[in-house]
Amino acid sequence: MAINQTIWKISNGIGQIESIKIDNEKELEDILNSNIEILNENWLLIGRQVRTKFGKYIDLLAIDITGSIIIVELKKDKTPREVVAQALDYASFIKDLSSDKISDIHEDYKNKYLKTDESLNHRFYTKFNADLDDEIINSSHQIIIVATELDSSTERIITYLSDSAVPINIAFFKIFSIGGEKFINRAWHIDPYETSDIASITTPKNHKQPWNNEYYVSFGVNENRDWEDAMKYGFISAGGGVWYTRTLSLLNIGDRIWVNIPRIGYVGVGKVIDTVHKADEIFFDTEGEKFNIYNLETVASYQYL
Image 1: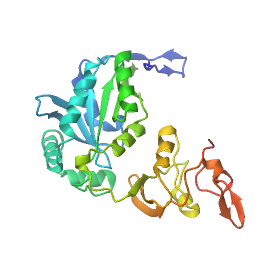
Image 2: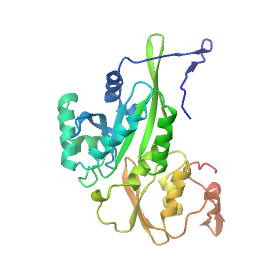
Image 3: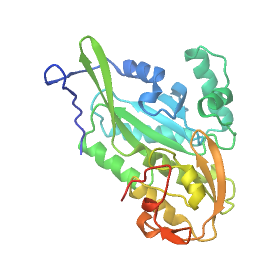
Image 4: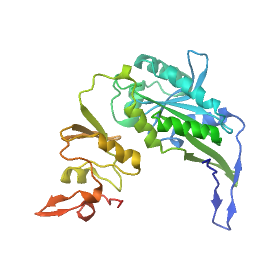
């Protein structure tokens, strides 16, 4: 379903805020080049107008803490379905680039657009407080199309590709103006965490080392989940949608898992001792009694599902 973004002011009388159009895609590119956080605060921009071997140019290129490369294609107006083919073509170019080639792209970006002489490794460490290992650079990639609208044909194609484990997504944007000030609004077609998760499990084979039969687990910490609770009671968890909970079913009893907290690093390693269950079906022994997570003393306030 296409998304129609509207903002209403509710102070000093209710009224709809006027939306305005930008003159060209370069204006949007300038905005995102200066503020990639509008799309994702956990991305580091490493390229702009990156020339492919096919003679085309990728609008923006970013990297996340996992080394995944994010291809950002901008469209200031309604997206024709051809833009999906264009973005997939860009992905076919990116997926085979070595870590050295990615570093070269960053070097060109730094020389043209950044007021710094910092290397990619240094900028990565500053952003994520983690070292950038050459082996993880471009271990996966994601495709993000940024547009004002989505026609029904493009919507069907992107939904199909995402359901088929292609890491592609749409970020809708609209610019509003009131009192001489401009505001930008952003909405996602698909949960962006789902897109990054697809990328992490569809890493091209030529970028992988032989699997050692161990698992990586991303453990986000917020008001609904805390690592102190996980350590105390001995669990890992997922929530927020079927995609996240379904991936826990990949784990089998006896598997070893390495737990990483984004922007902090690896915090623990453990072994799976039970199959996946709903939160209210798991009971922990506490002072001779059994309680589920909703009845325990915890740091986080776990959402009841």
